[in-house]
Image 1 (cartoon, helix red, strand yellow):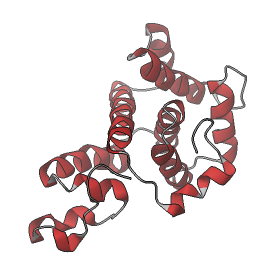
Image 2: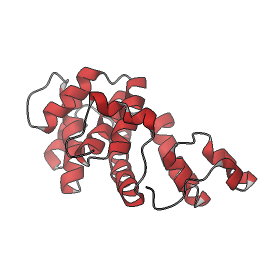
Image 3: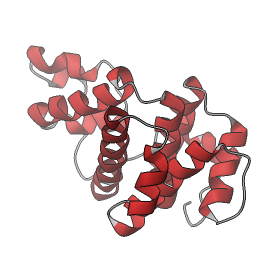
Length: 184
């Protein structure tokens, strides 16, 4: 059970109701602080709708963070979102293989992006070697967007865990296909 209440639009001042356009539990909890919810949506909205980073790579990086952190909420939401942006079941299976240090069918850039995300989760920062490997393929703008995307979702999983966010049943369905080891 979440540590703060989930609010509905009728519980908010009229000028803040637009923050619940997507009334998932995360949004419904964040609107306990409308200003912070708006700031959160600003960077999240940029990442999803305005970044020029390839959306499949973005979603793979986010999925890697969610998987590494055993964040049911993050991982399941981004399996659904990722599929809207070109992530396939084979990509997700390859992510699992890469996480275990096994070979996968992913292209070199996707493998390097996943490695960079793992390093940022485990080691706080990406190694020079991994950064240079990814940089062979991406512009400075895309590198900035990738690093900030991974960092943002490292923060998001900590918010989800601390607030004890409840996952919605629609997203829990993902766990039938992709159970997260150690998560019930």
